[in-house]
Image (cartoon, rainbow, N blue to C red; front, side):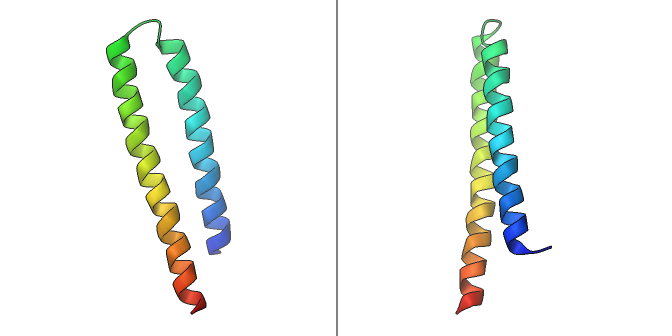
Length: 66
């Protein structure tokens, strides 16, 4: 699979996860603040991992150009 396609796919997945989680948090927020805090933490970790993967792909692509 081409790296540009993979990078675009990862960016789209990150955007979808953020939108779905934001909607989910607004729905669940009225039920439990503790659950919302755990959900925000999990979203932060997932977001960090996805962004690290995207940045590593960009870095590898830059090294290949040299």
